[in-house]
Length: 306
Image (cartoon, rainbow, N blue to C red; front, top):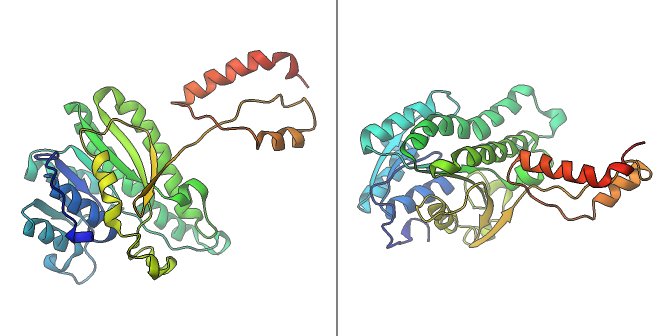
């Protein structure tokens, strides 16, 4: 599959798109897929020391898109740079005359036990894996709101949902991405700007050290690209979702709260452990969660006093 995957849809014809971290792996698969559906794609990947423009992974992705008849340009901004988002937005608008799709994919991780990790190393991972999403989202946001249309896909990870030993920085960054996405989804809903998170499983340069090579074909990044393509399309009718996807499968992830129990109805330890068996309910916003909490307070009011 990968680069050879063919799509016949042209539903993104004329749409301008930015994909970060698109030189290799998942980002490259997304860029190729969007371009095959007609989007004009700004392919971002930072230039490494000693590379000429033609040697960069971003330029190689652009070459593959153009060879297939698509439209693409390369961008070499480092997503850690606070000005990177503005540079990408300006380039897309200048070269394509449109910006409708934003896919913030760039990220990095260096797993290290928290007690062995310096704050500088923690910050470096957080800067790329969270602020790399934020810089682009913040720069593109006013344009998308003003035109009354946009599709934005931010990138999290199962580490941001569930965490892992040695991934405190990456887990924190990706959990922050989910919180940012949920707030933007609320703000963008009335302007038809839909914002979702993809938590992908793909065999790539970043994941290869931790994934069995026998899984490489099953976890081809191209198998995630169609879901990202749908999230970037006019047909996408969801916002505020976290979708975990890989190997042709997709899960919906969420954050929830149980119904309330009276804190002083027995030993606190018993109350807390009993909550662990209750189903969790998601809410559209923090305000909705608090409104439900007030309803439960009224129901429990005789029981709440110590």
